[in-house]
Image 1 (tube, rainbow, N blue to C red):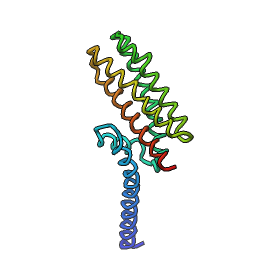
Image 2 (cartoon, helix red, strand yellow):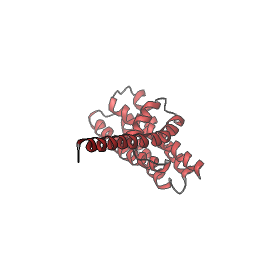
Image 3 (cartoon, helix red, strand yellow):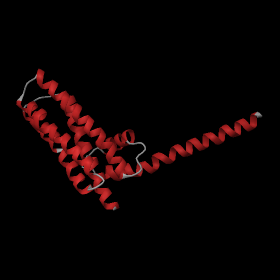
Image 4 (tube, helix red, strand yellow):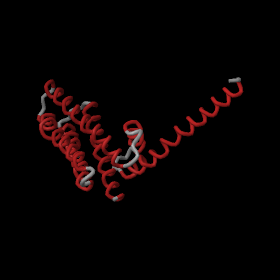
Length: 177
């Protein structure tokens, strides 16, 4: 191949790669924006960044919600483990309530939402919303007890964001039916 053909081939491949790369985020971004615009979370940019990182190939609300639910179950379980270890060093009735009641209820609600997502998206939306009650109650309890731990705050905030995203996405599944 002469150098002009190689240059032309390289240029053509570059244009194809740039064009194809720009198409994927655009189609997903509309999906992300649709969900993030309807969340109660005041941090739309955080929601958008989170979804772009977590669900880069989501093509519909079911894909998006399932990815977020998988993450939410794992992350909330890790949060419960962290808070449990925190409680071993800094025993408190508020932290104990987070570990024994609030976080287990949240994990259970996320799992229930995942099981119901396709068959009954209305129930899944409701259960996802309920999953946010545990971290919210935990945040209130530790605030009242004047306990400060940025990681616990982060786990609570992320669980609330996940709850909100899944609840909105599940409602959008219902609208598509």
